Length: 137
Image (cartoon, rainbow, N blue to C red):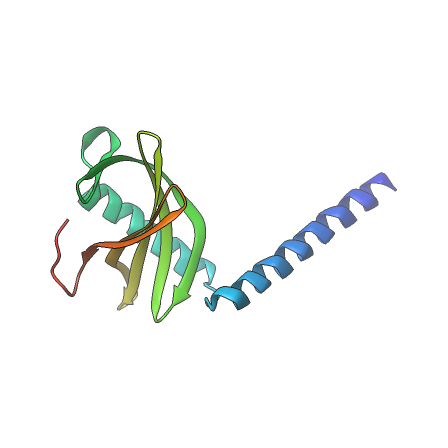
């Protein structure tokens, strides 16, 4: 009987989590992203961070700011034709939320834009790099 109750509790939590996620998508206007695309987008972002943004020992350039890569957030969304993945960086006591805009091209994923969204939860919305504009890091 205890096993049945435990299984029912897990099912309830899974359904509740799905409902909450669905409501969030409705509020933000983001499309659902399938698992294959999510993995491809996250791999492209990690490659971009490793190849373009970060030097040795995890020190990364965010414009004039030197920060350490903290983590890639789990959520990937699709907005305005781009996939968007988020990463966190830390510099001193500041935490930066950076959005990476990713395009799918011939079955592969490419980062086309990097934006600092927030510093310590306060909006920044500064484009750090964009492929079309040629703006460099």
